[in-house]
Length: 550
Image (cartoon, rainbow, N blue to C red):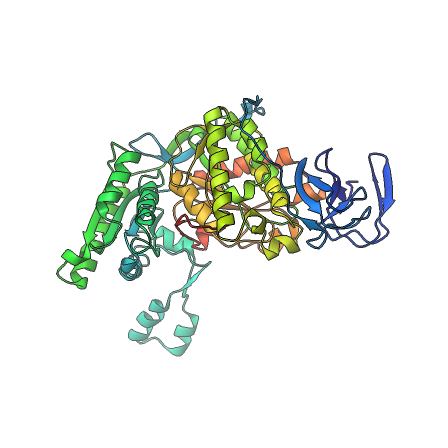
């Protein structure tokens, strides 16, 4: 029988409770035996030695806090008796070696993807409608209402009510009984069968609040991000709406596109409202040109692609005390499998790497990458402190309630998503992914800002672990939601795609779940499985303005 607690690393002086442990519960580990003095709730941690004021607390083998008062043997860690602490880090010459897991099972595996002219492969085929400035958001919404339903796209629920059928029956003289018996419920599958463009997975509308005001660098960063979405392998082309006078001029976007893809050949249509005869003519032209673009996009079909074409974003949100024990390490093992197959994985959320910097520095394959990572982390931390905050303020009330009481504790578990492979590249926000292997991408810990950045740098699929449940997605990259515990998977089955709670209860291992997750990723990348985020139309898009966001 699996023990109801776990010591994650031999260096740890705390244990994690895998279930509620009542007062008096007998604890036996490594020759140490004692009874718990009080209740320790599942997901929370308790001391396996008496700790004095100022003593260091270790979990995952990392420094995650300091005792702010005496902590008795078996006493639970709380925000009242522990404060955040993390180890210092330096860039040295140490370079780790790495032996990948056995990937023979998947060496010949493929997924069905969309092959682009620049050699990249998409897991979806979308047309984008993009405002260069927030002034155009209303016009984008008008296009959305004009295009989606009429072209057969609907992803905002499990069903829609087709009131037009009732209107049709009524106008044709239907009786009350006939109206009551009419079938007016349509599922997304029903609608998909009637799509005008069956090879276009969706039309995505990237509303945002930027493009003007603020500082010029905000608009430049926005254009770099939008260029990443336009050149993304999941994108077939785009309709771009410009007011005309905004900071985010099309020329800046055009230069950003050329930098990312010098031979860019996707169809894009740019419309400037201040040069239009009227708003009516502006919208009419936008609809017509988008329709022509969709005709071209529909000519592309899925074809087999090797797994080294996958670019997997590694994300977490709404984390709990089990995330670093089940979902994150399972995803980390999947990351190692993909890296072993020559694919690319990307770990982001730099505020949630606080405390594990030295481990990641040691895993960098070059001193240049190690230095760039250290510099980005220090600059981010310094800027946070300068506005009266800091990485230690990252854990949310939900994190704390469910056992993540310091940022270093949260980070040590969050970093498990990156597995154990070497770091082959370090990227600042909006920089494109160009190297195979594990990449580090500077984004905030904010879920949507981070997933927006992951897709903008080129991730064609994203795995999102959660312990509390987070209903977010991305417009262009399918997002797979992974639960850390069985209760969440059952309670929020409408948003969870994959459950790793069986690791906590002992039915599965990190390795077995990591392998199972890889198989699931292949099906999502092929369009065989539709994630709940896609099904529910969770298409969150929040550009980071490079201000402090934890």
